[in-house]
Image 1 (cartoon, helix red, strand yellow):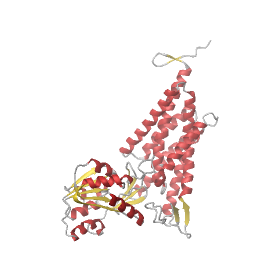
Image 2: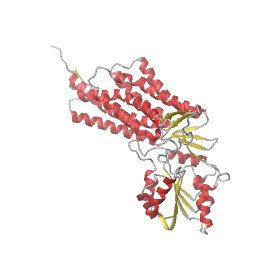
Image 3: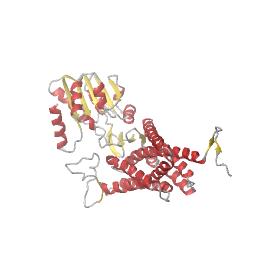
Image 4: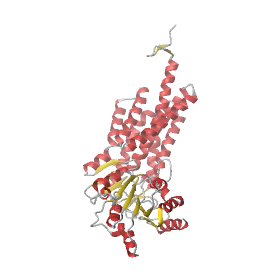
Length: 439
């Protein structure tokens, strides 16, 4: 009779069933980690490199969960879907790069996002190429649908591994616990990587390492698949390498893929123009308008000002030139703030009258006990959602009744609140003004 027990490294006897349970437990943890980690990586990378997809990042989220769910349902099928992950993921990334390249080189290509000139829908940054019968126009719906399918197919294999691990694990409660813990570690891990501003090569290296382990476990890590995984790591770095070769600086903030063009003093976020540092001597008077109006009505220069959305410092330097005594400059994006500190030719952040705050504007308003003569919303229009799990834009909480109440509490008795933007449509101005009047 053959003894079916083996000795573990600790000297305990373990049956093949126990060894398999341990292996499947590791798979439950690892697939939970990979699904959430890779999902967040895809949301950030594709939003930054598929033109205008940043307005619809929930599509990537839904595709990830649909693919995973379909994979779980395919757990009992003989077909191993994970073996297709290397070529599917590489094809999806290459498709994104191809679309971005074609759009950049061919000015006749228009991507129609919600009918750019529609008075009901506004997508900031899309109006530069308007739909025209003389141009080749692709509806954003088509692009979104293509990438929805491709991303969903990427996650079928991981879902299948997850479903099989659940079926094989003897204790369902412990199995779910392992999977949830893995998911939480994936979320926390990616959040830490974003906080450290690490590039996509790091995100996808971690993901590829996990996928390679699962493929090897299934004896499916062939040379062609290994080459495809390596090619994937190279492909995700192409946008950053291209920007660097063109003389730009490339960064990954917690919110955007940020490109800084030193020769133009311009900052791009997710491939859309975000802001330009304009030297005071050649800048327009729009940044100084509130201060000029204050002088025109016989008012004194503002003593204390709060600028929310301080960005790279344009509003700060105009406030300083108009004799504001103290400025609290609040900016949520650390990369954009650091570029302003380092590169703004007028050096507004270096002025001793300026206090820098890296914070969410709404949070700062709710926690400060300082009172201001001027509270200014300076072009607070983001190009991303508040998170990959919500339809709320990053600045949406600033335009609520409660936020305006917080501003009112932060103002001195004769204080002034100013908000300005490229509002595009008159109804947006009317909506903000009506809300302010109610407060």
